[in-house]
Image (cartoon, rainbow, N blue to C red; front, side, top):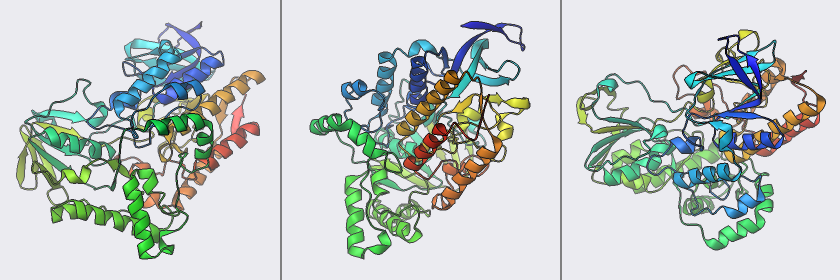
Amino acid sequence: MSQARSPADGVAAPVVDAIVVGAGFAGLYMVNRLCGLGMSVQGFEGGSDVGGTWYWNRYPGCRCDVESLEYSYSFDRDLEQEWEWTERYAPQPEILAYARHVADRFDLRRHFRFDTRVKSARWIEDEGLWEVQASGGLVQRARFCIMATGCLSAGRTPHFEGLDLFRGRVLHTSTWPFEGVDFGGQRVAVMGVGSSGVQAIPLIAQHAAQLHVLLRTPNYVVPARNSPLPPEQVQDWKARYPEIRRRALGFKGGLLLDVGPSSASELDAQAREAALEERWRIGGAFSFQSTFNDLQTNVESNRLASDFLRAKIAGIVRNPAWAQWLQPEHLVGTRRLCVGTDYYEAYNRDNVELVNLRQEPLARFTPTGVIVGDREIGLDAMVFATGFDAMTGALSAIEVTGRGGRTLAQHWHEGARAHLGLMPAGFPNLFAITGPGSPSVLSNVLVSIEQHVNWIADCLACLQAAGKQQITAEDDAEQSWMAHVRDLGQATLFADGNSWYLGSNVPGKPRVFLPYSGGVPAYREHCARVAASGYPGFDIR
């Protein structure tokens, strides 16, 4: 490790080959690959340990909506064989334990500074280095800066008048207390019925004296059908992991799925109902969305599936008005389809009230509760399950400055963009794992993480071999790529969902469809072709 003089403060700043921001699954694998290239690495992580979003999200019921046997690394055959998943959908403690096991197995913690948040990253043109400033006055320099900040890691709490005066406990699912929360005998409100709220509400209802669900926009929820993993299934997968992984990469989401061969509109009512009932019985969001082969592109096919789910809600929730309120108006899958256990059944409990904020608007908080409509609901605790500034929020929180003093905030003023979802133009040697314009949240994110990390590592190895120092995405290539991403999105029904895929949940955020919807196979093929062709669309010097 060499030393360089920091022009900002006159303090000698250490120089490494690469800085990695984030110690979730992306950051861990990135550090592992860089070390394999013989590069010196400094990682930064705001938490006290590895795990990323699975370190912070510890709310009741927190678990993954991708089946555990697929939500895992594929880069090491021994790791696949030695780790034992216990449930179909792994709970947060088990996923965090897996991340910790990986960190231990590959000795990765020594490369990270924990409890350290990166505040800024500045490109120093005349030296060809990134200078990163972090909490505690730390300054680090590197030739390459790799942002592994995660797609769902910047939680957001809406602003409400009087919330600062509320004397009860205020909680957010994305930063849950490590010691847990006892809701026994308490009056609790939950706002947000996305994945976090759907998972937490049934469990909070079991303990709270009274639970008020403050409903803004309902979401579709399909049953998880979670269960312990049969040992024979685990053994079969471990025996065939390479084959299974290869097959999964042939599907749009990078997941092994049984996609129905027909459109819903091509089947008669009896056959269509039978197909949907079978997927409801099997459980799982990705399985349900694969009932028909055109659920995300055919309005009529989607409407039939959406009507099926609305009927299920009406058949489970006994209060007719609540059952109506809980039926979404949007088409299924245009917002992220949620997976739950006893979610709709929770509204049949005597201690649960559904509050429709469209009929009783939230006016303000008081020291003792919240006023909705013309009444006050007394509360001891307020839980916000209001989601994330998805895909860009964690990176946008860092002041990133590239060539010519142009900041990332300026570059993204009209919407986040990055060539191949990997590099924003005008920011040399800066990579974003699962960035805007990549499959990321529309895929098994572990598959997307591994592909991005491998592409970046292979790119750096090529630069090393050629004696090159810099790579920068070109403006025209970035614009062309994001136009392609936009066109693909407009050919689907995603644009109709007004969801966090478009940034619609964040006031003032430009409405841009951020993920690549063309599917994992097409995306991987494109990235591989770019690399094999000598990186067209990138300026290498």
